[in-house]
Length: 183
Image: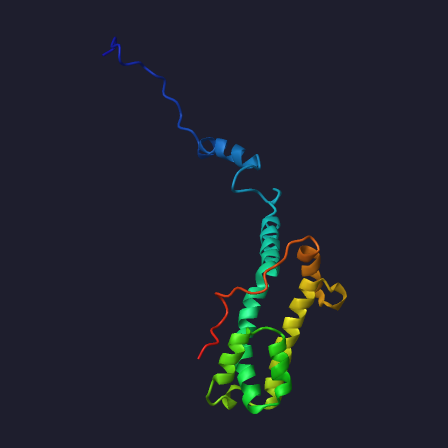
């Protein structure tokens, strides 16, 4: 086998040390562009994308919040109106109707309803407080859309500056979210 074409005598080399085997990996890690970075490497800023996402979500909520809040308050207004109309003073019940949270047909349907509505609230004062909250909310929405900047709360002023002043009118209610007022 001495003169074989396929065999070549190679000199015996010493096996590489463990350091020589990982030398190229160590050089790569020292560049600072690897996943595993040393203590002196720069940390990437991860907060900025999350702040942008949070700001966009907040802006979206400020734009579409009224239909959701309106639907919530309309459900509460049904209970409050039924209680006040049947067991309380009619003053706040009439003010609740004046906010136009109910259509005229819905008011007629509510006036025809029969039942035991005194369980809706523990007292007349609790019903009056809830009615006043709903009236204040509906008044704030009307002021926002009327452009009455000075009479708005801080959230309303922010929404005015972001949307109403720039000509983007946020929705006030979506019928598919509103609870049914029928029998």
